[in-house]
Length: 237
Picture 1: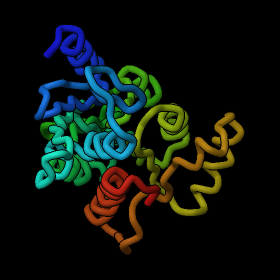
Picture 2: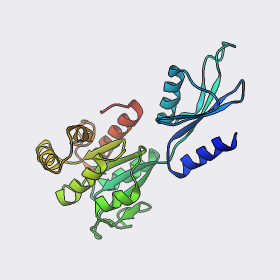
Picture 3: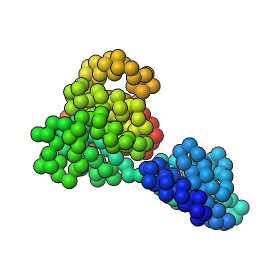
Picture 4: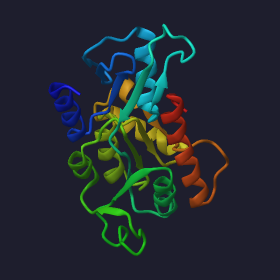
């Protein structure tokens, strides 16, 4: 690998920027594919570029091209992605099953709650806990395109500032707990705070897929299912 290409790859990894290293197995030439740029020794056709970026989004390294056609370019895609993260605002009952479910799905989980009696190691064993105000915590944690944010407190003083930060961030998923009536009031408040229609359209609320969930564990499953659907199917779910 050329020095400049290696430098760009290492810089991307240090900055938690998703990037795919694409190698032409015939020539040995290599190219870096970012979400919005390409740097390297060769270009890619539109169809190839789209497939590389889809593989990057899905964390799927591997070969692309027609392996039975000697004239077809054979390219190996190596996806380099920062960790998936789930930032949970509110150390409430639903967060207790949601944290381990998310961890089993491959997410690094952080629970944010300034209320010390809620965010304890006893209630969330092995989970990263932050006792700062949610908007301050989210700013410190630097939300990226591999981050999902869920607010669960039912308290506008905690949820609203977090949602404002998350909806203006690159987070791939933002969800919030609450009934349809609660959500309607929330939308009014967030609109008054200056969020645009496009920003508000990113919010999944009431959070989770409609599977008839009732218990905290069932609601946690519905939330994780919706996050998975948004990420894997690249849809609004």
